[in-house]
Length: 209
Ligand code: SF4
Ligand code: SF4
Image (cartoon, rainbow, N blue to C red; front, side, top):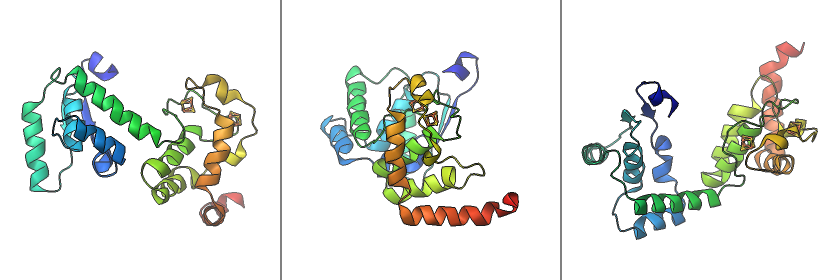
């Protein structure tokens, strides 16, 4: 990690993605963890993976119950860098595959495709599109409204003129133009489109005058 290489402390916020890596994992991922025989909960797998990174200084994990405090303290006292085995990493690779299988676009959010000359927020749109299928449809659309739909400068997929510039830079070889059309259909069905346009009108009408 760049920060650790410069001698800086590395503090991990939201180590379990606000609980999503515990409460919203696909069944396939849970099955993989279970069959490992380790007996670790999803939270323990996530925390142990972080403690296994020698660059990590502290893990700031939110806790809502005594059980969580006990589990976190136990894991923090047991785990340290280099303790996880190759078998453990193989299990986590399988878990990743299960999570990714639910994703609609293999976008890593690297942003090499940006900026788009027409202002399309390519990684933002793909992130919300994936979120619809890895978390929930309504949460994905809500996130889209917050991070793409209601920004001052419009960043919709429909602004794409299909120039292809972005695809030349994508290390994942994603057919961005095609996937943007797909994502837009899923994220902005007609009622959402009307709702977002309506909200934009009231939020930004002064600027338009
Ligand atoms: S193809 Fe569309 S999204 Fe990609 S750079 Fe061109 S206008 Fe932007
Ligand atoms: S370059 Fe490809 S992988 Fe990276 S953010 Fe853009 S679409 Fe996603």
